[in-house]
Image 1 (cartoon, helix red, strand yellow):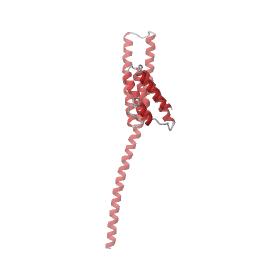
Image 2 (cartoon, helix red, strand yellow):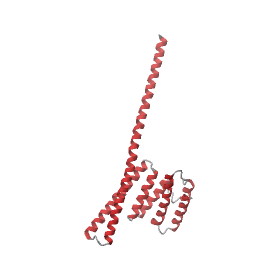
Image 3 (tube, helix red, strand yellow):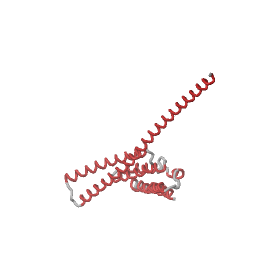
Image 4 (cartoon, helix red, strand yellow):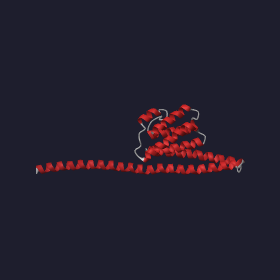
Length: 210
């Protein structure tokens, strides 16, 4: 009887420990499920923000082009012209904010390829709206993100040696080709008189394409 009680007490202790361990694992599993659920919801939100920004960009470019044509044809004047210019400026500001929000969300989700695309498009918009410094910053950030290298353009030789590797799939190849186009814009459109910068951009691009 004493042996039975001893064994019974031992097994009860084992069961209690197992229950505590099981409870801890269940808590961890619930936490992981909750985190996964947040990520699943966040990724579509980030992509939706980028999609929304692209739709707004298409609409903005259409309106801007139509306004330019109307001005050239002398079809819009006076207060109407002033009002339309103001509306386009407000639309541009809202669009820049939309793209920056998209980039922020994508960066939090570590969706680097989409971050590069978003920064490229943001740079295009900023340059179009007469902000070459902003465009230069966005395009530079895009290259940094693509190769995970800080100040990649400035330190292009070290970046090429350590961070530029042959693409393993079509998506990576596409992003690398995009950075070549970004380098050309960064050099020609934001620093048109910097011949040394143009040379470095060309050499960096050749390393990427090699």
